[in-house]
Image (tube, rainbow, N blue to C red; front, side, top):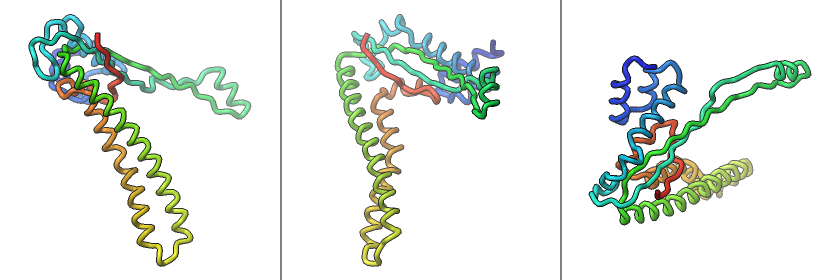
Length: 206
């Protein structure tokens, strides 16, 4: 139980980070669980049935989109009899317990906006593929450039600088492209639901 649930609810409604919400709870797990339960209750299926479109505000939204949000975090570390036995024979064994929390929110959507969301989702997948490909290519270029640098001739400095800079740009640009992908996949009106460590998982039409 928390001392002031009303204040916590106000913080969540205002889009506060989970780090601020965490201060009202005795553990991270409790804070995340409360956040998930509250958001799922706030954006439930019944309330979405008669709401305006979450994207354009059209009062005649005839469909409902289900958004899934998820996070996985370390819930604890255990060292039991089996781990002690492994330690005696020279193996360090520690069991790490992972906890996965997920919740669903429902939002009214009109057919036109849903088609736009599907299109942006497809474009986001392309951008994500390009970002990962660019990251791998960039790391490869940087590593090969460093190997080349060991045997670099004086006449090759300019070419080396151009190639190395290109690889570095691909690597540095990866986080920006990942942020763009997140923006493209989530309508701006419900983007405040995604608060770290929760991440958008997928959306389907009900």
